[in-house]
Image (cartoon, rainbow, N blue to C red):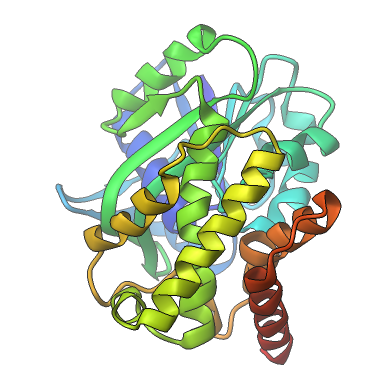
Amino acid sequence: MRVAIIGLGGVGGFYGGKLAWAYKDSREHEIFFVARGEHLQKINTDGLLLITKGGNFTAKPSLATDSPMELGHLDLIILSVKGYDLENAAQMIRDNIDDKTVLIPLLNGVNNANILKAILAKGIIMNGCVYISTQIVRPGVVEHVGGNGKLIFGPTEGSIEPYRKIETFMKEACINAVLSDTIDVDVWSKYIFIGPLASVTSMTGQTLGAVMEKEEYKEMMEGMMKEIKMIADSEGVALPEDIVQKSLALTSNFPYETKSSLQLDFERGKKAEVEIFTGFVVKKARESGIKTPLHDKAYSILKNKSEVH
């Protein structure tokens, strides 16, 4: 297969690095990176150094570029850009795909497959999510900080069986990949946890541990989860009835000092995914006539905060 990873941040760097390392001597598979700036320069000069729990290694793709036009036809595309860059990324890969090209977005949020379908007339567009904490340590270096590294993907409709070979392809690269026939539930199950976590930690400037220690913040987290559950219900996504309790319990699996990616983007003065984590819920609530006062408040605060940045 001809495989491209679009976006070599923490997530793309981790999974792309594993694929490039595993298939470095393969005659059957080619792994391409699409990155930019100094990160791309370092990858082309020295390769991508991946620091993982199981050891460190340097991965070198078949080609690393900032222009998908150089790659030609692709069989599999993994998108791991920021949410606000997804539409632009989709425009960039239009000429690389045909009706059989599989696209897997691994972004925050739940609406990524719909965004891609609205732009791309071709391709098999899936949805996906990951459970991992990664970061770019410096240009050319990505570190696995935490999380089990699970990558869940699947078609939004139809049978999953035609895509077993992609699951096998990932597993043979030591990726904890799961092909799911309930991908909408999987993606929303992550969102109901990570969305409130991102909003509350970013509003308060507190770590996850500190948030869960203070009753006011913990109640805010729980209330926002309940609001998302109502939105999921209105969208026809059958989340488990105990999903809020399970999501709150998940917090105990993370170190006290855990910070959300949204919070870190604010701290580093970077563009923040406010629309993905908070704005999306507010928009869907208005469309459905559902009241989400906690998200309304969070969105107002975080949108103003992002404009200041």
